[in-house]
Image (cartoon, rainbow, N blue to C red; front, side):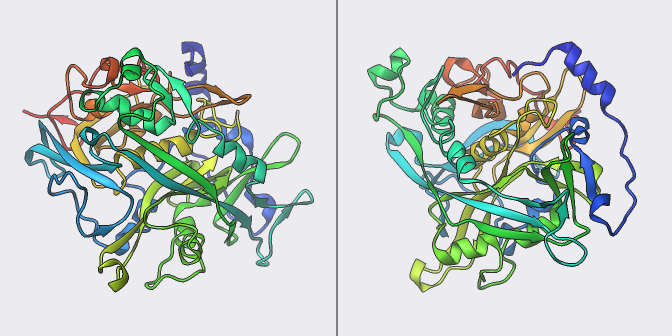
Length: 449
């Protein structure tokens, strides 16, 4: 989705400094108009956000140390493979580093093997509680945000899980992303070479979605806001990120069933071999207890649980994401419907355990001048800060979806020219990234002397 310069300048004009909100004990005091969302820059969670500490910090994830093609040893989790690339750069401490190990979902591209991964979808119904501890009511409507069966079906029917034709071929979004970025490493059939990449030959990583039992979360008063449309109808909720994390993830070992993730694990709805989605309906997060620091739309991680004799005492990693459905038109820059879910799924494929370090890279929006400086293989973060072309409109089964454009592996590995199909640095829109970040950067993206 491309934005005109006029639209971008309009956005700059309406973005205002943070607004102070007085604390009050009434439900009415937590109401905000949906126009508020036009004044924020939506994004997903990043490594520095508090929410990133939940789940995996119960264990000791560490960082990738070795390049073992069979994946991480001693871990019971989704099928994965490991490798490394070589390029000069600096680590988080500013020390020179040239070898960068990474681990991704599936099997080694040269294997030619197809991987089928179960992808449970756990709908989560969210209640906002009033000062009396009961579900709050506004304008005669309970403040409950639920995923209807129709909404979940719409997600299942989206390009994340259904075949769609891209310039790289036909298939699920993340399967085609992986094939595009490792195009130089996989065997190609005649169909591949002609561009008809929908055969079962070669290397594919396919998600098998299934809808599981709906779980419930209840957010105490004082840790939420809600947004209403011009007719006074509640359409979205914003939750304090730490409160949200504490209520979503199990905090005890062994796990109990008091949280949606814990309950799903105990019921067997999700397993360590899956990529699971905890799916919300217009539920966003704000940081540092400040609603003006809204809105986080999703994040990916894993829940750590200890192993036992039944799995060879290997630590268990339940790879998962929280992501929200986004009603179209709420945000300015085209983040709609499945944008958050596609972002988190793509980053899960490229960085399932959050340990893939890269040289420092910088992504700067040419219009606003703002951007990101990071040193990890988070392919959605690179582009979500770009105002001109963050999403890729995809018409499928009578609906237009908006998955996010993402950066390809060659962009992080500073490969010039790119080793990806068509020499691209981004997918699906190959024109979104046309050049690399400045390279050999020190922490904070400062140029090396």
